[in-house]
Image 1 (cartoon, helix red, strand yellow):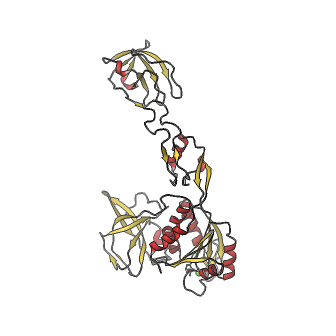
Image 2 (cartoon, rainbow, N blue to C red; image 1 turned 180 degrees about the vertical axis):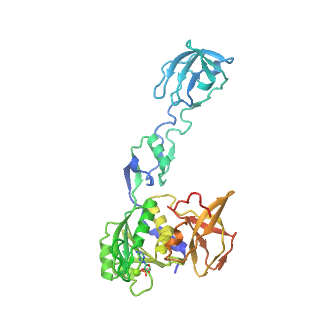
Image 3 (cartoon, rainbow, N blue to C red; image 1 turned 90 degrees about the horizontal axis):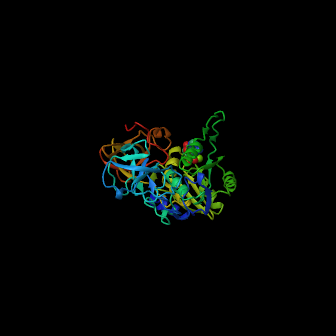
Length: 408
Ligand code: AMP
Ligand code: MG
């Protein structure tokens, strides 16, 4: 049995970063950049009016109200040709380029149009007022987004601003899921005595998809060496094969043995955490296989702790690790202190402090404990109890949104 951080380190070292590719801009969110992105132009690309109003040569105005002749009209999308003289004002709309000669825009609310071709500027203004100077938001040629950056919605606008119709990104790893267990039946089959439904497939597919890594579910695999071998062989096209079940000590837990017989090297077999002690990590270039525990909560927790950081790294993310925060425990929890435990909790905050409410939890098969959970909290090995008010480490469960209105 190895510590969790050791298992995570081994996995992160084994996972190859996928090759660079390109995707259309409209599909790029959720990928990590494979190259630095530089600004192809200043932002804004010209001195831009930030208000609807009048562009004036403010430095030349001596007293207010100032009566100025309206010399033109500049809507957004149109460059002004004429120079604005000291005794003139050009009507200008938000987003339009400031005309030559002008140095400020007075907003329309503090101007009075006389109706005779003149406007009165009622309030004083300084040079630069209501003008976004060319390049002031972002200068041309500077690096706007770095290689490894995970592209989110706001980044899409940045890429569009710089004209990237196609975007250099790292490919995402292709992930297959095999659910082992001779007791498993499909969800739609009529229930048979002694069988259980393959719930893990649905939990895990939704979890990975919510985190941007769709799984290809390849169905149920009976607990025989031959069936497991065949199923592994059918996943030759995948970068990472996830299995559930068959990784503990039972007579029919055949995953690790089959992988060895197929020429895979086993790098991890058990990890000192609860739930999720049995975790098989095996590799045979270029493939990586992870055997997750069969119990529904175990496979979910192992996915959050081990597999997500790995697949993010494989997808080129520069920040692949799960974030942990500190929170104050809302209830006392007891613990069999042989291994570090991860329990379901629910986060809330009050006056700037983060709180974690433990969720009633019957162990590694109890998915119902996660109905209102949005985080895992840690109880370290050797700690028999954590008291209400104590600090705990919490990891927001990626893809589990906090439920609105709920803290308690
Ligand atoms: P195993 O590690 O194969 O012994 O499985 C541990 C427990 O998880 C057993 O009670 C299994 O029936 C259950 N289990 C295994 N695979 C699944 C699955 N795909 N869906 C739901 N429960 C499962
Ligand atoms: Mg099994």
